[in-house]
Image (cartoon, rainbow, N blue to C red; front, side, top):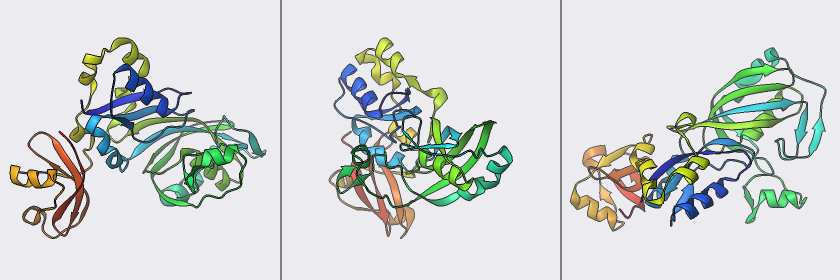
Amino acid sequence: MNGWINIYKPKGYTSTYCLNVLKSKFKLKKIGHAGTLDPLAEGVLPIAIGEATKSIPYLAEAKKNYLFEVFWGEETNTLDSEGVTTNVSKIIPSLKEINKVLHLFIGQIDQVPPKFSAKKINGKRCYDLARNNEEFELKPQKVTIFNLRVVSHHENKTSFLVSCGSGTYVRSLARDLAFALNTFGYASKILRSRYSHFSKKNTLTMDFLIKNVEKEDFYKYLLDIRKVLIHIPSIKLEDERIKLIKNGMKVSMLEEFGEVNIKSLIAQNQSQVLAFGELKSGFFYPKRILNI
């Protein structure tokens, strides 16, 4: 059983909890998810089953859309509503003021991750260090914001829609928007509405799967690996080169591509994804080979 399933993660549960419930219910040996959602966040959580787990890093390259709400005038240590208040301000920005600073966040920007995050320092999770009140600093990282706009504005709360690349923290974006407006703020709501072609309207709830789907019918809800990774180019190969790739050997694709470099490429037969790899000077180097 190999493929992807589009789950709606409810607020209040960890992404790992959703994996464990599905793994137990449907007796799955290999399972993983793309793009961790914070416990207080909800929305699209793509989950890979079986050999599809090898494709998880390649989905990370895709765009994500989030609806999020910023509560102005207050900052918490977690940058969301769960944390302890650390800073307050009487400055509440107007809609006009907010719209004026949005352009500062479009394109590639530097962003410091939240201290309460799954980032690691010397092998330790940052959220563990933060909970133990240990002092540490996180370096800014490059992230890409494709689009950012206001959805609604009501007194001390503003809702936004953002389209962003991998590694972006919405909680950090909320904090930085507030800084740009000379105030404080935190993400009071976060909902991931899209991840690549996975959308909120096509999600399945955990409740539906647990109560209505039997183990032998679970496969009916899985999405094909190739259809999920539509943003990655692919090439169909004949049996001779397929055998080489399955043995982990590089193969020439000079005839098809010339001496070009492609960071991510899918090798497949007529119907199935066989491997993920990189094209260097016209040669395909398999990195992840699927046992299908």
